[in-house]
Image 1 (cartoon, rainbow, N blue to C red):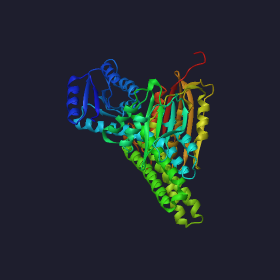
Image 2 (image 1 turned 120 degrees about the horizontal axis):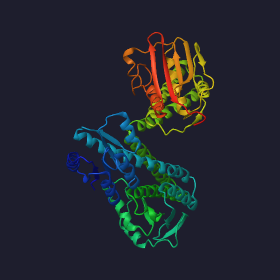
Image 3 (image 1 turned 90 degrees about the vertical axis):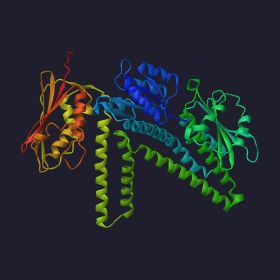
Image 4 (image 1 turned 180 degrees about the vertical axis):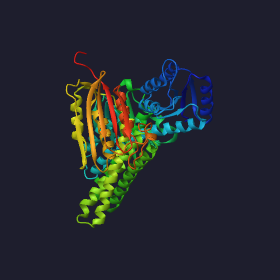
Length: 534
């Protein structure tokens, strides 16, 4: 089934060009010349991709994508902007866009953006599926050591209810060597009586294969809508030996009709539950089947583990290439594994060769360095909303110095003016700014020196000066130091000062710098203050 694309742009030429190109790539296309028209289409029809110009009369592209994703949460969004800047990219990504292109653009850029956006949506779906399957996978391991099918069914239903966001669930189990179903467990709001599934049983008997949630076009998922009984979605649990049971999920009326993602999640849960139940039944027959059954249990367990590993690989591969914070988030997983492995090796090796210990310590330091780079990147891309309160400027400096790491050989001197008015700021964010400035000063004085921190008030502003006696900044770099990714250091990626400026700007303040090569540098932060009478 071809993906459906909605293109919204108030420029007829661009709208026509994009429509022809997207249709030639095999997508179904709908057009809208305004945000209002596009939103009306979204409320009437289903779309897989939205391509929207940021600047349109009436509803802007940012507002459109936010409202459209309220209607279709799994919608892939690509925005078109004529403002080629980091701020435009951050604003679009924060609003929920998966990719953006800037005017003028080559038509192949649009194609790549659509494919990237669809890949991100799929990655998000698979990530949600992985999170839902993890408790089931752990339960499957424990299930091999217990034979109480009723207790196991209740635990699986609790997991399914949480993962599917249904308001009630029931599990019907097929009686072994019979063609009847019996209630295994139920939880939440399950109306009585349970639906008559005789017709569905006949249908599943004719097609005794598990539904594939990832089949191209979701053809088998469409069959689920045929077997909906009122508010109940009925999904067969099919194992290698045939039908194991039936999962019933009850939804609120407002949640109907069910989205493709809801049906897909139900199928994934049912397939994993079928594997778990089948394994339990095989274990229960261990005394009768002895060696033969043991071999089958190992096979089922291996299949479950391989399915779990495939989902992990798919999720990792799908998220490679994500912009900004997405990449940073994923990098922390392998770094955590490395750190844990180093910790494990140190404990296992004991009194190891000093060279081995030395290299393990090098790995630990490099992991910490990489984590610091990731933190800078995430902080820059995800500057959250400010939470301000009236704060004593001098106390803010003292608190920051308590957190700062000052090496031996470096002196810190403070000149804090008395009677300063309080400032309405987010203390945590400003401490982050001050720590960045202090760390820069420390790095500029590798052989020691003095850092003087001074506060004052003038012209309705409170000022903070951070003056060091370090190497200074060359004149050719003065205009670039607040630019993202600009750095003259061998370590770091050049986001510390860019983040500091971003946070100061968010407080409606100013940050500037004065420097002399060989004599030192002074960064000054100025913030508006609120007097007691205001």
